[in-house]
Image (cartoon, rainbow, N blue to C red; front, side, top):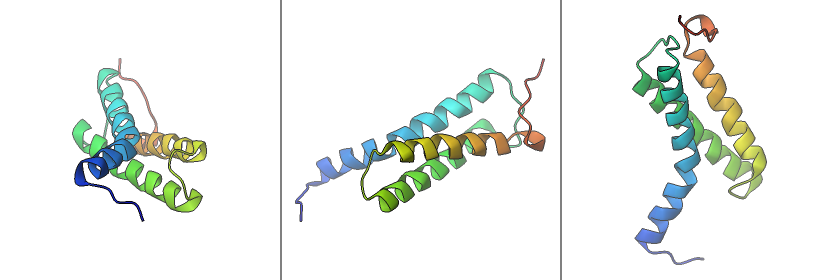
Length: 97
């Protein structure tokens, strides 16, 4: 068993969830900048996408037995992109003019 102090564990955990946090912020701010209509406030969408992304990363870790597999990141992008699409009214991403 590996002995790990709190600081090392904290950095491992932070780096594990970083892709989900970055993608959730990018999707939320991108939708806000493009003025895409949303069903919820942008920060709620970011939170929901972050939770979804963390779930996908955790499932990828359990299913593949390793962190950082490409298939996990592909599933992360597909799941979070679909989640952002479902947050638009009618499920159709349209840009307001």
